[in-house]
Length: 152
Image 1 (tube, rainbow, N blue to C red):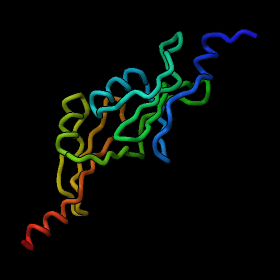
Image 2 (cartoon, one colour):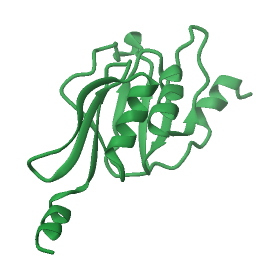
Image 3 (cartoon, one colour):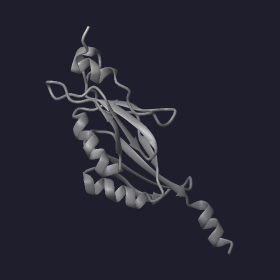
């Protein structure tokens, strides 16, 4: 039996998964979102299934900050309808919260929480991307540096 092009795409080996908990999202416009995430969060494409006849893709796999993020377009006919992102935040540990926040906002994310030193000791900021996903940036704990400076 001959293997069709579509069957070959679905069955070929994909990129290795990085991380032990991997978010899998349904994003309206998944291929466009992957391009946006490359600019906003320095994502690297690990694997993308080509779009189907209607322009939807069933799988995008990116590496962001050393971990995998996976998503697809909604496929309501297969039980995965589009639902607005709610009740979760994707958190990125970064070396420079301010620079990461500025890059995301410059690329098109909406400002939610400007970079600030939080009461729990971390530098923290939060944005919402054009696809409705909330992203948080967390930097190195600042309290150790503050306490060290006070005691010098």
